[in-house]
Image (cartoon, rainbow, N blue to C red):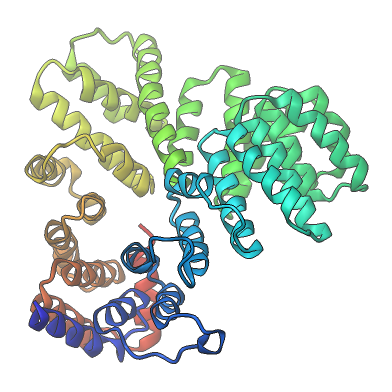
Length: 487
C-alpha cells in the first residue's frame, strides 16, 4: 500500500510543475503529510490540529474532517478539545453536513470557550434553518445572544437569522413583525436587507406587506422587478423580458424566481418547468438539489399532459409522443414529453430511449448539472448506466453533442465514486472528433484527474504528459482547468 501511495504522490509531483492544479496539490499534501511550518505553534496547539488546519487552507476540507474524526480527543475536558470542535463545526458548515452540524451544536457541553460557542451555535442555527427546523435554530441563537458580547454588525446578522428561522417554520407573519422591529432599530434599511426581506415576503405571498419597502430596493435588481409585477406596475411579459436580459449576462436564481412568478400569473406550465430546470442547474445546497429534482420530475408529468392535450396525442402511442417531443418548441415542452415517456412508456426500449433523449436535450440546452442530477439515482448500477450510454451515443440522430453527453455520463460516474468509469467517459469525450479542440483538452484533463482518483497512476501520467506536449503554455492549461470544472 505504501508503495502505491508513493507512486501516486510521485505522479502528482510530476504534474505540479506543469499546472497550478489545486486538486492535485491537495493529493500531494494528503499523501505525503509534508512537515509544513506550524503557523500556530506559539499558541501551544497540538501539531496534529495545526496540520489539519493546513489541510483546510490547502483546499482539502473532506480530508481534514476525516482527520478530526480520527484524532480529536473524545473527552471535552481533554486539552485542545474545544479547538478541534470549533474546526469540526466550521468544516461541517462548509461541507453542508447540516444534520451532523445540528447534532453537534445541540450536544455542545456547557461552559465552553466563547469562540467555540459562537462558531458552533451560529453555524448550527444556519444549518437548522436550511433543514426547516426554525425552533431549533432559535434555541441555538438564544444561547448565543445571552452568552456572547456582540458588536453592532453581529447583532444585525443574528437578528436576521431569527427572522429566517420563522420563515423556516413557515411563519411569515411572525417574521414580518420582526422585520418591522428591525427596520425601527436600523433606519434607513439598506438595499441588501430590504431586498432580502421583500423576497421573503413575496415568496410567502405577502405582496401588500412588502410594498412599503419598494423605494429601498435596487432599481435594476430582480426583487424590485418581482414586486413591481405583483403590484401590476409591470406586465408579466415585460418582467420576463427584463429577467432574460439580465440572465444573458449572469446566472441568478432570483431572476428565475421572477420568471416563475410571471409563469404562475399567466398559468404557463412550460415556462414554470423551464424555471425549475434552471433553478436545478444553479442549485448549490444538497437540500435544494433534492427538493428541486423532485419538483421538476413532477412538473414534467403535468406539463407533458398539457402539451399532449394541445397536440391531441393519445396515451399509449409512444411513437407519436416521441416524434412530437423531437419537434416541440420550446425544448422544455419536448423534455416534458420525453420525461413522461421515460416513466410511462409502453416498452422498456421506449422508456430508455426517451430518457436518453431527455438527458441529451438538457445537455444541448447547457443544463449539464440538471441532466446529471435528474439521472442520478435513476440507474441502480454502472452496467445500467453504460446501457444508457449506448442509447445516448449510438443513435445517429444524437451524434452532434456526443462529447457533451459523455461529459454528463462522466459526472454521473464521478458522483457515484466510480472513477474508472468516469475516466472512461471523459477520455472517450477527449478522443472524439480528433481530440484537438479546447473542449477535448478539457475533457482529457478531467479524465486525468479521474484516473488519479481511480488509482491508475500510469494512465493518469500519460494524460498529463500529453497535455504538456500539446497545450501551448501554462496560462492555457489554467484555462483548461477552469473549463473542465464548469460542468
